[in-house]
Length: 471
Image (tube, rainbow, N blue to C red; front, side, top):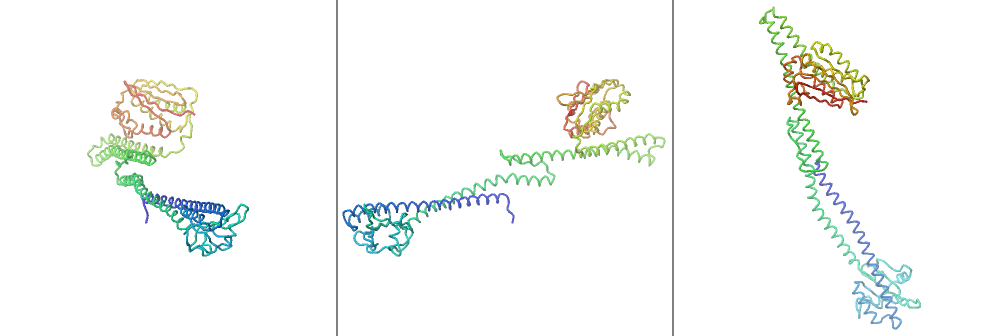
């Protein structure tokens, strides 16, 4: 059974907390246990040495069964919580801290092996029951009682019960476990809240994607004031949604425009053809209407050809790596349209440098840009007016501008002039053969090259200017 991201995050966070505290608890418990044992052994050693020093001093004046030494051993035992007893050189217990008068340990004998081990350099320090001396094992430390001449007159044993050490260690461990549980109780709700907050945008994206699949492009992801990577993902998703929505709008507009552009000539062709076939149109008028059918058919052909050209241009790759001479391309385009300029009585004023201007891009594509702009300028310029064509370089860029004198393009139409199938009012009256794709093709080519184009129309003067990268 698969788990969602939120569940995995909660389990991961909980597991990390539990693992961290488990490692910390084990490490801390081991350190505490070692520390407690070491401290207890230090107390055992120091206590045994103190009692041995006191016994050595007492033995200078009396025997090892001195009443005062018994009192001091009992007092030290109560103060340290240790069991203390003193035995003679044979191992017989002569003083015990348990009772001042009668004690079960008095008279017992400690094996000689323990006595001899206490005389060695490291002394006697063991967890032992001293061969049955105690009912259970205890931590025991033993030191000899030495007189000034180095003579051993007895031995001091100090013992601590294991239960006391374990109790202290258990308290440390319990405290750690309680702290870990308390931390876990806090960490789990925080992890749940954090996971929900992190996964909420992802769930919104999934829901939005499902809405997109149903055709609803208006859904967006709310950012909720975030400032992290998730916010960047949400912003990117919203930008993608905006692009998809605009693309869908353009697709619908494109279909609508194509339908409209195809409908008009198809209606004309169909109507006149039917009229000729059923005799509605007299046969003496047939050449006139067949000419109209031919023109409309050519218009349909131009529309389909331009749409195919646009599709090919969008699929082009690597044209940015090519180069061409902008001067030569511009001169060829002017030459191709020169006869139309003469027919309309236009005065051409070219400003083209003599030297080559090598630019980045496909010469054929840029030639088409220049041809479409010049064709529009010739088409919409007033008869017997002036046409300016200019090529110049500035700041690593080459600029080509075409300026005609004629009817001004309304300011509100300038932002839409490069849209597909857009035809301004003056275009509709003067360009009945056009389909509104010429300037869209210009913009598509220049966008592919990473270049810009500007249009200015004021006081009867319209200028188109675009950039090229000089190499």
